[in-house]
Structures are given as structure tokens and as C-alpha cells.
Length: 307
Ligand code: CDT
Image (cartoon, rainbow, N blue to C red; front, side):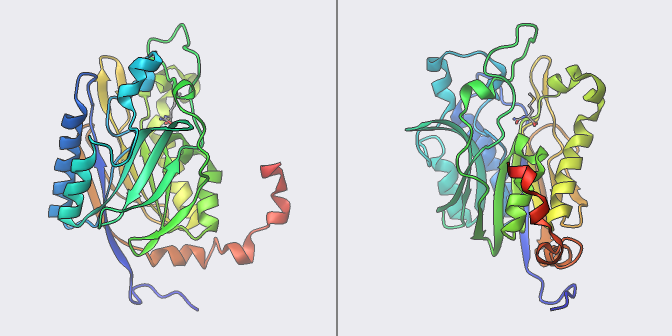
């Protein structure tokens, strides 16, 4: 069937709920209140789905070397947890769906996790971060660490997609967005909306020599290429700002179209809401065109990728 723009388009109103600095002494309750404020603003704008970032409930603790006991306070043992129940309740009252990233403590270990919650408050999807960056041991010469490999196990869920919000939704977490395999695994399953939260410390980029000036460019490059090459929309959501003197997280929460264009982006490094009404049928123009996988992909030549 030929694709025609505006032929009974499927529309979804999405919002990226960017969160600014979360200080170490801020309680979980205070953070959840900030998230609810953003949700209420999303509802006022009539958004149907509000997306929060990676590990949205606390300061970005992987910068610190913590004991197992100290670590516990950053993790949720259940979802909804007592601290996040008010977020679930408010969402149900408002009839809005949401995406939330959090640090998960499960029986088989600690994961960097995200969930998708429908407008009735049901958890309809769960994803555990696959590409865990940083180190397991502190790097002595670094003032700020990135100890995700110490605190989180590598995710075991793979890249699934869910039929929700009238489309096919997938999730990825921060570093995952830089990997084409993340996008392609979801692309092959017909994804139409990818939700990604991030904590990207510019501190590391500043040390990264040749590409230190390119942090924001690499963010856009990954998001825009992932969308275009798989014909999908994406909502990218930052936890940003100066969390402690000298420790700065990148912003740039954005909504990207299947054509690879940024249609909305935050220009501040604090709590902010960026929203757009997206036309899901626009995905077809790419999926049935330049990236028609059935017609043009050559998986027989791609075996090296998984060997
Ligand atoms: N949270 C996360 O995955 N951050 C990484 C940067 C890690 S720098 C060691 C990112 O890809 O943005």
C-alpha cells in the first residue's frame, strides 16, 4: 500500500519531563513531588504520556564510591514502591501514562531499569539497561567516578517493544542510545516510539580529549540517527545540571521524528517539560521507503555483528 501523509493519521501527545539537579540531601518524597509537578504540567498541556529520565528518583549516585549499605537508599525494592505510589496515584487521577527510570533491587541483583505505565496505572513494560558504562573500580585520578559497572548488573531483558498508547513502544537507557544495535533490535520489531532517559556527565567528556567538545553533538547524532535509520519517533529525557560543584550533567531533552529531525528540545538545565503531538503514521514513510527492512536488509551479510 502506498503511504500518503495525513491519511487518517494516528496522533499521540508525548512529553519529556526533564529533571534538573537532585541534591544528595533531597528526600525521595521531595523528588517525587517535583516529578508530580511536571506530570501535572503535562496533563495541563493534554499530553497522554509523560517520560521521566534514567534513575529519576535520586541524585546520580554512580559518581560516588558507596558501601553496599549506603547504596541501598537509592534503590527501589518494589514498583510501585512506597515512595513512588503517589506518582502512580496522581497519574491514574489525571488519566496520563508515564515512563520512569529507577534503580531496581531485585532478588537476583541490582539493575538500572525503566518501566512503562499505562493511563490506568498498570505497568505494561519493563526494561533493564543493557550497555552499562563506566568502571567497577574507582579511578584514582578522577574526582568524580562513574561506577555503574560496580552498582548494576548488565540487563537481561533484551530490547522488547510493547503495544501501548496506540503504537509500538520500546525503551532504552542512556548509554544504550549510542549503540545502533539497540535501535535496530527494536526497529526490526516495528517500533514507532523509543523512550530513552539519560544521565550524561559532562565532567567525563571534558577529560575525553579529542571529543570533549562534542558531547551535545554526539547526543543528537545518536538520537537522530537511531530514529531515521529505524523510522521511529523518540523521546529523550535528561537528568541535567550541576548536581554538585564541578559535576555537570548534560540536558538536551528532545523529541525526534522518524525523519531524524528534532521537533522539540529543552534549552535549559533545570526541571522542564518539552512536549509535542506526534504523527505515528510518519514512521511508515521511512519503514516503507528507504529503510524497508524486508526489501532491502541483507542479514546474510551481517552475521559478523552477532558472532
Ligand atoms: N548513564 C550513562 O549511561 N551515561 C553515559 C556516560 C558514561 S561516561 C563514563 C552516557 O552514555 O551518556
